[in-house]
Image 1 (spheres, rainbow, N blue to C red):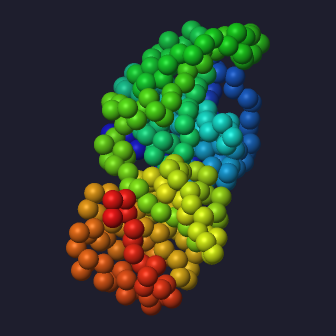
Image 2: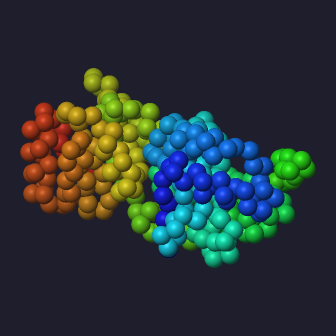
Length: 292
C-alpha cells in the first residue's frame, strides 16, 4: 500500500540521489542542480491541489512500507485549457514492484478528485518501454510521437505523448478509488470565500446570480476531503455552504460542520440554531437540494 507525502526540502538529498541514477540520466533531460538548488526548487513547489495558482509545480513523495521511494509531480497547468502535465519516478532499487503504477494511479485519482482539470498528459522517451507501460496500465493513451522533443545527454530524443481525459477516467473506470468517486453536490457562494479564485479549481455544474444582492452561487461537485479543505477558505460571519448526497446533507460553517437528514427536519434544528447565532436569517437556512 502506498501513500503520497507532501514535498519538503528535507527530502532533497534523496531526490538528488534518484536523479543521478543511470536510468534517470538515460531517459530524462535532467537539468543540473546542486543540493541547495534542489531545495529552493522544492520550497517553490506546493502540495496543495486545492489552489493550482499557488505554484508552478506540485510535488509529492511516494511512501511505501514507511519508506520514501519516489516522486510524482504536476506542472505546466493551463487554466484556459484545463490540463496539466504529470511526471513520476521511482528509485531504481524499488522498481519492478508495482510501486510506480500504484503511485501514478493514486496521484491521478487525487488530481481528478481535488481539481477541475479535464486532461492529464505525460512525455516518455520512445525507448523507455517500462515507463510507457506504467501509463498504459493507468488508462493513458498514446496520442503521438514528438520527434526530437528533448535533447538528452547531447542526443535529440523522440518522446511519446500520452494523454488521459477525465471523462474516460470517470466512465466506470477501473483506475479510480470507490471512496474518491463518492462526491457530494453542493452550493458555494463566491462572496463567502476569502479567496474566490479557488472556485476555478473545482468542478462547476451551474452558476446563478441572485437579485438584488448579486451573490454568485455555484453548484459544484466535491469529495468529502475537498469539503474539509474548502471549509478553511470560508469567511467568518454570516456565511455557510452546504452539500448533499442521497439523504445526507452536510452544512458547513467556518468553525462547525453539521450532518443532516434530508427527510428528517428534526436533524436540521442544531444547524439552524447555530446559523441564527452567527447572524444568518432563518429563511436562508433552507439547505436546498435538488428534488426538494
